[in-house]
Amino acid sequence: MRTLAVAFVAFALLTACSSGDEPSKAPSSSAPTQPKPAPSSNAAAASLDPCKLLPAEAVSKALFLDNLKAVPGPAQDTTANGGKARSCEYQHDGKAAGALAVTRYEGKQGKPAEMVASIKKAKPGAKDVPGFPDGAVYYVDGQKTATLASAELVGGTPVLINYTGPAKMTPEQLAPLVKQALAAG
Image (tube, rainbow, N blue to C red):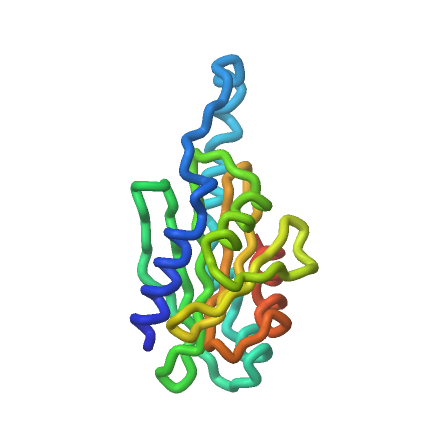
């Protein structure tokens, strides 16, 4: 189940954000002012550790499960779209209880609302979730997992954050988890 959850999270992240696939087209006149902000932007984006953004205690509370354990998942980098995905898997007695994934699109331009709209378009039955500044989308996939995804800019870098758990999880259960991860980023 753990491998399945990680594989699905990676697949969902890598196929959902077609809007972030185009390279950045910054005017050459802005090049002299970018070197100083770029390191801090990259540092901010690189510091997005999913297990730190959403501690196991928060997931335990949302799922009404004691003794959840947060375990870093494998890195999933995709050269095709520049996505650098990191995940945190939440386990209860050795069984998967869900995963938080954070994908950074370094060197890309993209608006969070466009990223969310792209996911909604790519996932049949996906529906908007209110209460997120740049939007959020919820869907249940054919493998019986539920996902809530949102996006934001961190230091100018587009970042997609989603939580995938059992299909029985509602948007109301998933929203606080994604909101907490967004707020911590």
